[in-house]
Length: 395
Ligand code: GLA
Image (cartoon, rainbow, N blue to C red):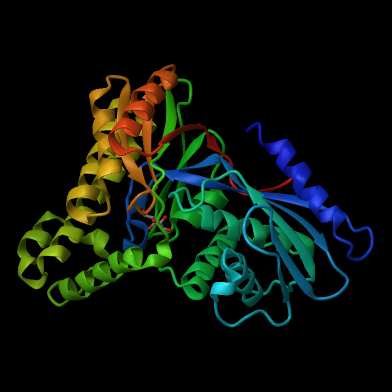
């Protein structure tokens, strides 16, 4: 358990208790983790495979029911409190809601899916870097949705809950993300990675050998927002490429069905940058399957090699890397105890994830943080995570 957990929950609960609304209703606490994606970059919305782990950091929500229909949303560290009405949630996202858009979007989605929202107060805090590619937005939306279901005393099947988290982001916030983050944050199991076939909607929990490998995430300190348009641009490019390829191969279900032969014979249908995007997807698909097979077989060297190759493909073909991410990936490839490094999340800044031989964590931190600061005049932070469990109510 991260050392920040008990004080954070205490603060959340205290904050709730100090608000002078109605009566003595019980305060309940909910948690939704962030995630790292080990393999399968930008595959989810292309129907491909992904291999994330939930991490032991995320978003905490302290929640209390109200007698009226008000929805009060407060964040411990971001922006002013929001006061809304559960019976009249806003039709559209707005700048003035700030971080609250992620919560409101998902609350609307669960309401539209049949949950009767009660008036409630939610106080939100977390220990996840925001906008760093660790799924801070899905974690926030999911924690609020779980709290709302709890307060309404209505359960929702886990996959449906995850689908609502995705819809909140797609329809309300306007980010065309896939199912990777909602599934990872909802369905993960402690000590396991989650292998997801995003087209067939099949999940498999694959044991993660924590005794021999550590997960090290390095935060470049560079922030990006998925709402800045570059993420949606990649989604749009992939949709366009698929439509064009379907003119010749109408049987293609998703870009993940494109293999080397189609890529080779369909080049004339695609302008150069679309060819690069499709190339990444078509190579990442079998790479992620191989990586999952390697994890099942305990072949951590093969898993590491797939991770390193994924980074190279993100850089060269999907063009979502940056000098800072590349430097960390390359530095990792020079260190004998690093099995593989890649950017994680959407890219364009944020974090890398590396698999290390257990016991080398401090050495890794030293090999990265100091030289990175000297090279980029910016601070990078190495975090060590273990594969955590999915969202849940805390006792
Ligand atoms: C973001 C999106 C996900 C996924 C990743 C890239 O995290 O929210 O749906 O597309 O980027 O793999």
